[in-house]
Amino acid sequence: MITKYILFIACLITFKISFSQEDYTIKMNMKIEGLPTEYAAFGEQETVTYLKGEKSKIEVSSMMENQITLFDGKEQTFTNDLMGNKMGYKISKEELESSDKKKKGNVKPTIDYINEKQNIAGLECNKAIITSINKDKKENKIIVWVTDKINVNSTITKKISGKRSFDLGDLKGYPLKVEMESNQNGMEIKILIIATEINTKPIEDSVFQINTDGFSMMSYSEYIEKLKSMQGGR
Image (cartoon, rainbow, N blue to C red; front, side):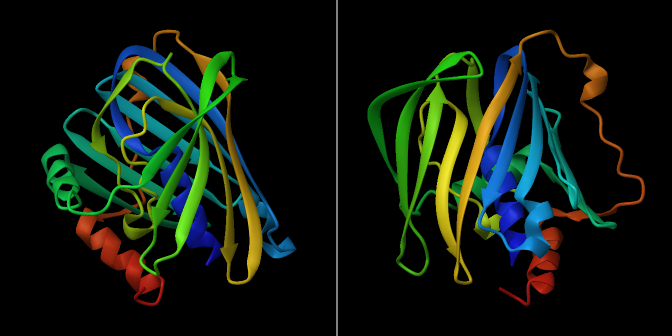
């Protein structure tokens, strides 16, 4: 259960494929409090996001797994190395757009912008509370701190872990901090994701490459079905 939840958190961090008018390298740390000792290694992750024009690359690393998501303007490639279990998928921009359109009928979460500000990694951020209703009709809330100083326009909603992705709706701005509480199988956990460094130096094109050697690569739909089978069909 914890492994699946960490996949969801990784998706939350990198929630959109974006078009950037500048080069950005954004480093973020995640910490989960309340995990049992045997899952403590899952409780901390580092994420580096590279944005250059229509290209993006997100690297998520922890003691237990490493994920890379690359979008080159035409295709998204995702790899996940979970304790030696290496899987991945490829999906075209058109398929992503088509998949996103199918979700248009879903009820969007509500977003309340709060008159509070916080400086994160040198940028002023505004507070917002996002509320959504899950399939069990339970209310989910997360607190995000967003900045309008990062010049990124969303083009495609990013989907890594399918039904476990958290919908941020029409959130205005780029999130640099996320705060969330959740109950997982009776465990009360707290999640904090925060940007620690933002760099606007030019990024070499060589950064936007991904090595899939040794990974079991499949289509996006095949990957989702594989995940479902690993999760007992849920």
